[in-house]
Image (cartoon, rainbow, N blue to C red; front, side, top):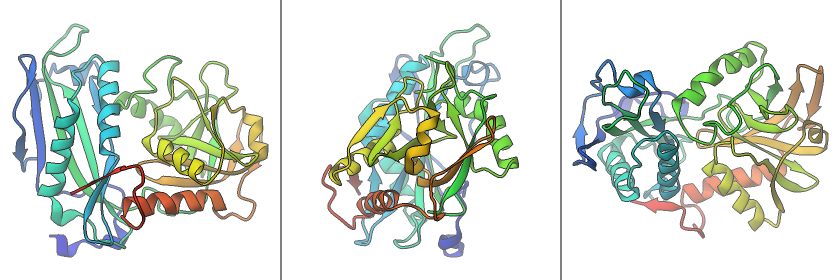
Length: 339
């Protein structure tokens, strides 16, 4: 029951809620929205999602604000990114209005699981599309199911908004050049598990991957985008193999609003020497400030946070983004969908 939830100590994990919503694509069209309390999906054993990886997903959050209203952050952008992922894996794109309607319905149906304002927790929204028609030949499905589940979550990192140490390991590639890196598909994340577990065993929170072609430039940071403050500028890697993070895009706009110049470009490893702040950013953690980056192959540590604390730019961006999501300040760009 909701009354039993310790909102302040929620992990970032799955907590069962009352309902999920679904819609099936069949005979060339999307059907009616279905509401169910079942947490199971019945699949044919030859479904394309099981054999050929036709699976994509998204992640976004709903928040209860100080005014008691519920806000979903950047709903339209997640809908558009999921359409891009669908096209990248030759799946059926979900119409933006259908995506929005189903997200809103899933949140409203599970309203009692939206954490209270001030708890530090949020309602995580997970849209998922999978190919369900059977095939033993390599081809795209003709039928798909689109599901939206929600679950209350706490901070992604147990340390919360505190500095973590990350590492560079060149024996692992996140994705292939011109591959599926810019799409939010499960295979990308499955392929990163070995490297991530290796990093954790060595005491680091994540792997800072390098570009898979030349191993010279910074790529992504585990499951998140990476940025650094270099020479007073907000600098973030630019590559066709990097997932276009909606959080990163939001932070770039807020940085510009603060008068900080923003650059999207290749960042060489040695530029970390000039970084005064750095962070991994994404829906789950917003910003996870980086204390240091350890290049394990060259036995070199780039100390970013000299005092071990998040820097002023990361802190200001983090607080500003949270204030927008919680309705504590003006939503200048109309990023929130208010229910």
